[in-house]
Image 1 (cartoon, rainbow, N blue to C red):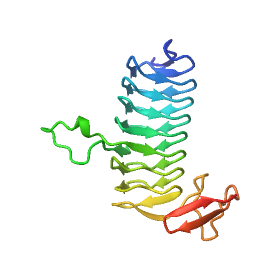
Image 2: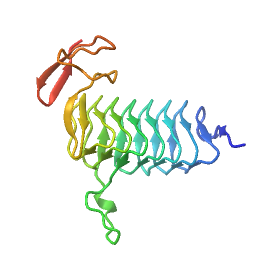
Image 3: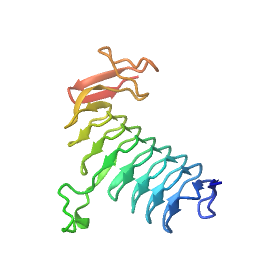
Image 4: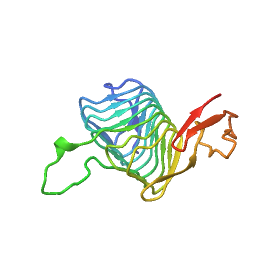
Length: 197
């Protein structure tokens, strides 16, 4: 019967025996890596993360603390996740804009920073070189082709802002008050929202 195990290289982390973690990776305490994953060299995974089945991370990818990566996600070089980022099942990150099988473009990988608390829905695509602001919310199947503002709710192909989301992941109505927490927000412009208390 297959099981989770501790690897002496990563005290306090649990790794399923079907997964591979290459030398040179760093995994924080409390992190769980489930079935059939591959963590490549230079990857740094923070504490208390959950890495779902069939996930590939690296090389040289950084994840903050508390990230949740669902099944069938690949995080390539250039992707950087801040704390508490959620990546839904089968969401996609590209690493170059114009790939060709016969042309090596490894020196053209683009940085794709994902802000704290951002959520990416199932089957969404994040085109490389664009940032997602903190607590932004990318709807399932959306295709992100430009930078995303903090708290923005994005949907469609190409993705466009269709609303605002609170830090708790609740869609904000016209009063811009989170129905879960009571936190209040203020729209500074059609593309900028701030938390005011």
